[in-house]
Image 1 (cartoon, one colour):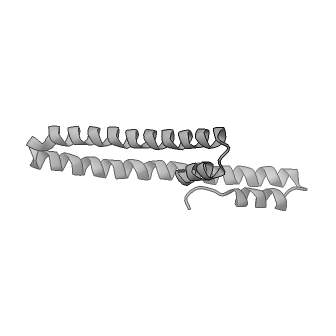
Image 2 (cartoon, helix red, strand yellow; image 1 turned 180 degrees about the horizontal axis):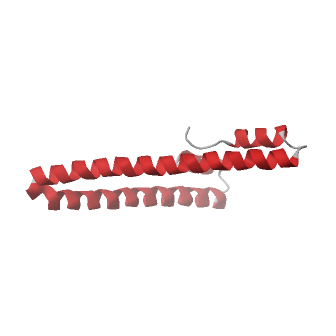
Image 3 (cartoon, helix red, strand yellow; image 1 turned 135 degrees about the horizontal axis):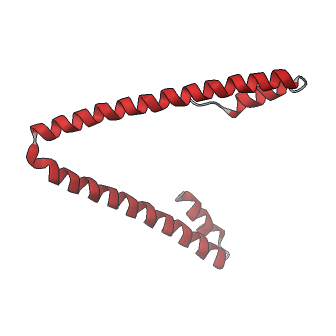
Length: 115
């Protein structure tokens, strides 16, 4: 909802396709609106990040002995998530390759389910 849609851009082009000056004006106005939205989105993300940083610092202050365990578990979770994504991608690729080599549409469709 924050970012623009193609439908809006197509509407501007269809509405102003005969008047080039007005088209340039409308596109310029639309680009300014997009820039404002991006800037507000970036500011919002930074504010949320600062809030969570504050929350994290308070948590670490209250429970000082859990910092190392929290960091270890976070790193392990990231590694596990990346490995699962890599294995899923490998399985999908392998099924597609086997489906094409054996000319089996069922195996190829099975690989489409893993997407």
